[in-house]
Image (cartoon, rainbow, N blue to C red; front, side, top):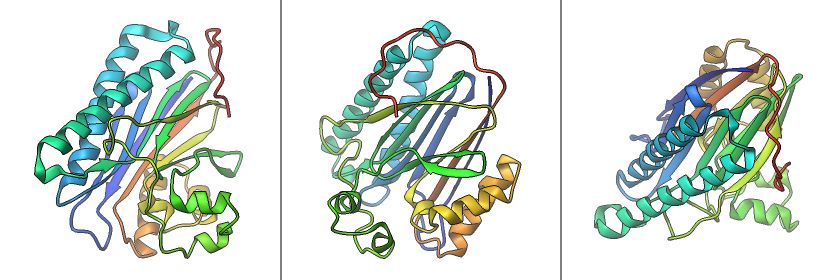
Length: 261
């Protein structure tokens, strides 16, 4: 199974600096997207550290482990790399006053033949486009999502809520963080979208689906998504990763996996 990758970031129409970061290692199917937060320039530092560290460490492990590693092995490697990145960001934030309080959201994907391992922290998202239907495959770690789950707000009311950007998990804010990870089956023709809230806050899911359905090439699709978010106000930085799967999947190594979704 082959994978085509495209990524794009944009400062948006309101911010003067870009705190979103992306890192890809197409040779081993790794995509990392992070949306930083913190004081002046600290968000950029946190998101950049997360992306660079995880891409380097996880990519090295995957190249050495080859395709013989089970999905459970890959998940453990993802967790270790994220934990190490978290400690590095947390340490930098506590040793340099300029970086005090910095942190970042995270979406991390490892594309394998026929399977996707996607982990996330915070409110940056993962979506799957399949047979003309868009489905969100991550669930935000945010106060707003907790209010929806508790029945305090409906999803429609949440579109206009004032506390959209209050996350309940972030990388680098505490010495320990839990990444939520799920295993997904991949079909030929699937397109996977990873994005920061600069896209998902500006466009409803149906609007994202409308843009994706109007384009066939990933560069056109990605640039159109960013343009649509800017046309809707562009109130935040925008980061987009698109990955298209093609071909026949190889048999998966046998492994016990309790996190399938």
